[in-house]
Image 1 (tube, rainbow over the protein chains, first blue to last red):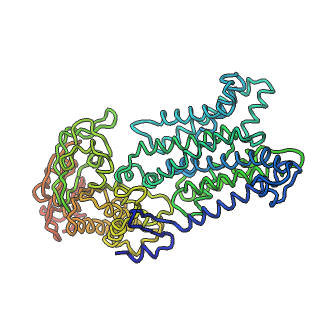
Image 2 (image 1 turned 90 degrees about the horizontal axis):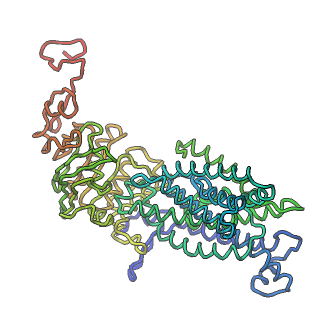
Image 3 (image 1 turned 30 degrees about the horizontal axis):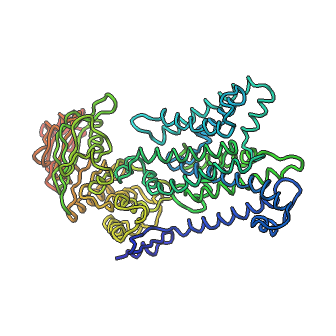
Length: 357
Length: 277
């Protein structure tokens, strides 16, 4: 028998198929959010390809033709060699950061947690600075150095936060501490660096899509192709984890294993994104919050957060390319400028509700 | 509903080097309501967490239907035994139905997240706890009493024959406390569930429990029906507090009346300034 209140409910649509025995709950508003975000992402991607840096403007029709592999040779070159790879790196990095932020915020039950608050991003920065200034591991290339730094810091945070298991709260505290250790290390390395080295470090430290291409997009695409399905498989357990460790354990969720798996996914997504595009700040913090408000879910929705991250990075990159006539700003500067007020708003909101991190 | 047995033998529980429960043997009566009572920090909640497999024992074991609970997969335990921790916190915006639906997660798989059994169990839990009319409301909009009922509804929807409740009445006003305890009795009488709950109020424990488990410093010092167990001597031994025990005029169960430092506990000696003559 169906309870009339449950089927009539506005924000829940339950479905059930007898053979094969598949059933679930759909949230119309979340599905609408997905569709809307996917459309916006596509539109912004076309805009980025059509009106990227440089004076060579392409009409939307020409963009679509070029993407299909047709049109003039100049159009094809601009689209496929210059603008599309840059836009794809932005798209993928944004998605990875949004996904990562959603995971960290859900696992720590803290809307202010994100990989760039907990030191994952700063770990990548310190490793890259060490590589440039000291020449340590320089053969790896900056992308892989950044990855190694981010992963190392992720493991370090987990180990330091371990005391008969971890809790979301301890991960946040330890993460903030580790984050500042990495910042100090980077500052120390900068103070010892030659001018040209320091310039190179700083250029990397503000997230940047200049000179990014298919070489950066490839590993990131593979990472997301693995991580996104993994996270979607874990989402069912994540929902119980959001009720607290003891409730989740009582509901049959293996708490420590689930949290470790989720944190690994979150850290890996942030690490690969940072390795490809440098630290694009605030995206991982803001995207899940924006997505959550759009979809009106309890807790940040994974897929919608990833799509929001893509939109934020692509829009920020467009702004950074168009803001000044004679030069291209790094995208990290734009997300920083937009993100700082967002962070303040978020903090004041959390304080009003008495749930500050 | 069948009654699985729940038993602790030689159970020793510790946080790091601090032993909280020491060599405890306990048999939970099946199909009855048991209340665990004792002073603060005597190991009540710790015991409850161990009974629910949330805390691994240092020594000894908890047996659910004869199987050591810590060797069972957590999902399997969650189908037989539910626990509601003390003052749980839900994420902002979570609706009552979503919360109660989470109670079904030990019965669900990735591709079967809302079977007709899930639907029935959730509807039934909402009706049993009187929360059906609030089903679509977010938890943060509810009163403390309603919120606690929603959490209990989640545990009810889990559909386990054994239910452990850690101080289900904390932070509720007296009317809501009685409300929740009456609900617990309903769950026991109408559905035959075994209930174990930690309670702070001795008089409520005496009135609502079939069986008292009295703990002091990590050990069970007395066990049995309230009328057999409670006397002034035991209360003084466990809580370090002098009292008189009378019969509850409503239920006939023991009623503990504390004496305190400013009374001598003997009104027959004559009228006193602050005692009713």
